[in-house]
Length: 171
Image (cartoon, rainbow, N blue to C red; front, side, top):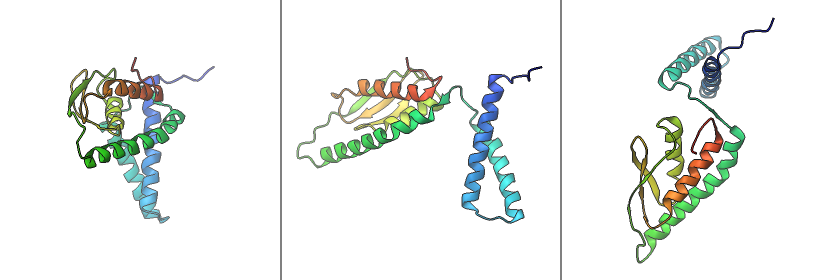
């Protein structure tokens, strides 16, 4: 007789609860490194409360993050952040300011939610652009130079993030 396999949704919620519980428990141990029974009991209670609250406020989303793919993005994101800072500084200190500021609407393939918010956060590191709002179908960016290929760069970033997120789609 084979054991019953729980539905995928139950496994997702259970996995999220365990992962969040471990993270909150580790945070408690870092903040309160004590082996006293009372402290450990309070830590277990605080971890349980934080985990339950977290699951209520931010339910687990569909899909999974491919950790290896995410880690491979870190050096590139750090490089892009430095390039963005240098670009803005260069423009700020130039005698003639080479900017054509304005707003562009990026028609995102990602639905509103955690993945799209993460995408907007990541793209705020791109040179000369910052998310300034959103609609149901687009993210509005304020850019320093509307003549630059901002939409193409955003499209590339969205595809990169979609590859990091299993089940995420930006096609």
